Length: 303
Figure 1 (cartoon, rainbow, N blue to C red):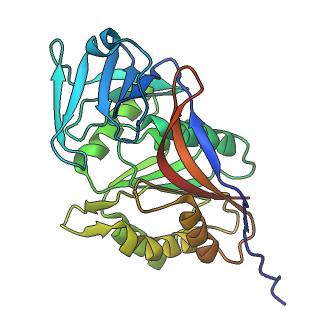
Figure 2: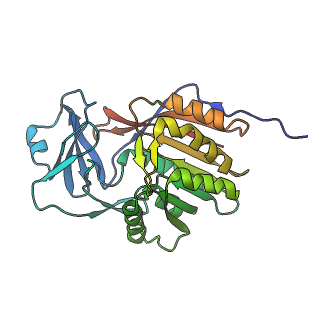
């Protein structure tokens, strides 16, 4: 007789996972639709429309920024203005992991600092694991910081992203971190296509990170639309979890999504696996600690 199926327990309340500053990053101030941040040696000003309040630091602190991003549309496109000579990249770090900061054409700096709350959770989860080396899959892995955090914590990582440039940057970050010899597979491919093939192969993972954009294109022109494509991809990811699986982390940057919606999706796709689903919002906490900016929504299954 098969054991009875147990539905995951879904947390009754949302949780705000706050990222506080560390040696190479700080949210110095915010307000007036902008945020002032420190990235290693550089002070940076970026648009943030949800900062409806008034900045606390004097105008001189903002005017002295090394780089300011001027948006050209409501998405992420725009251009940087520099106080001095532009730099292509510079080293940053979080824990054991090192990576390059870069002034990209899409307002971010080649990583998302609010994800540090997830990095800490993943690091603790994997370092506390027992048994064989866990296999983890990082979909839409971008420049690889989460992949390197997991590799440093002892996991065998499969990193998938549709952008050849992003995967090249991820490899550079692995070399900078001294983790090039770790068991990391770097794959340039559309996430949907890769996952479908892994399901057919019968592959299994102990952990999966799913961090899709709202909209994107694969290397062969495949189109990704969050609301249309996420349910099927989440279902296929559930098929890839092994009997000893430990986590599935789902993160989304979209104005019309919520942590509750992501939790509901995981609860359906992970029916029968037991465990617990926590959900809520990722936020960047200002240096003073009494104000935070919500950046994305998450749902996280674990056991």
